[in-house]
Length: 321
Image (cartoon, rainbow, N blue to C red; front, side, top):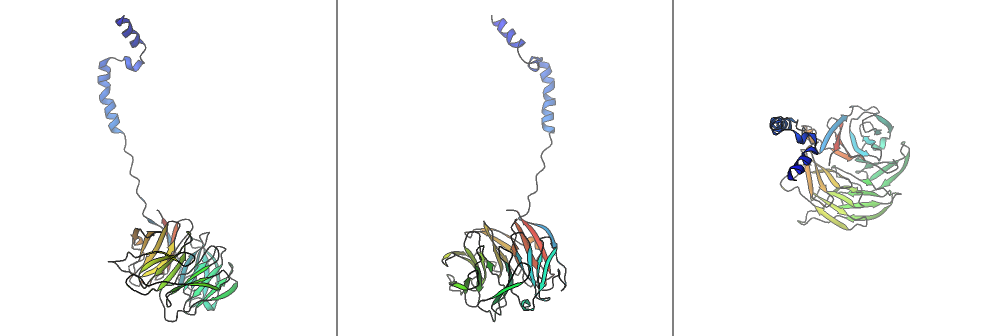
């Protein structure tokens, strides 16, 4: 009975299992060798946090050229805006640098900053004169908004227009942020308090974030302060100890806060609650013996647009985090 059972099992095994033992012994080294000969997958190189994708800019004072630019601002379609003080031109470009619009206004020769609203309206601030000139998307003037003048201030200046049309404008001399309605009337003024060491605030940037909060770059105390839309302080942080560098510009995405610091320029990134993510010098592309500051903006598709005013040129980076 046992002999019959073994014979039945052997007859019903697959063909490869019925091979003689010596055949398996000869085949085993070949199988092992083949397993070792399999090619290993190549390691995929990791993209840098800010991946350089190109640059553009032609020096000059004609339409489509840059001589003494202020900006950039980026709209919802990724188009880039500058004001050129040398030519008194307000200009709009495709992200790749193709000129789209130029119009002249002699009143923008002392411009400090440019912003754009959700409908493509263009806002040009002259901080020294205390005014913001507003234009339709094709360049026709709409109105002039009055804000606190900065008579003796020559540092960076960044203001924003929120999705609902509200403007948030820093007042460095007064240590305040001015909140204006969509028609340009001042509705509230927030005083930025001194820091824990008693340093007086000098807000140079006020940026409305997608989270409904407003982020302020305080150059006096070298920190970031955030406020609710009602003016309540929602937090602050400063991580520049040991490597102080001036705050030049500020931008906010749905997840991160970005700041440009000089004089050896670098982009510093934090989470929205102030946890540092990284500090990157953009592969040294902004290093120059003629360093005169810099500014940047975030595009809607995860692109960083950086102005290098010393050349002048526009650098483009893809944000990979």
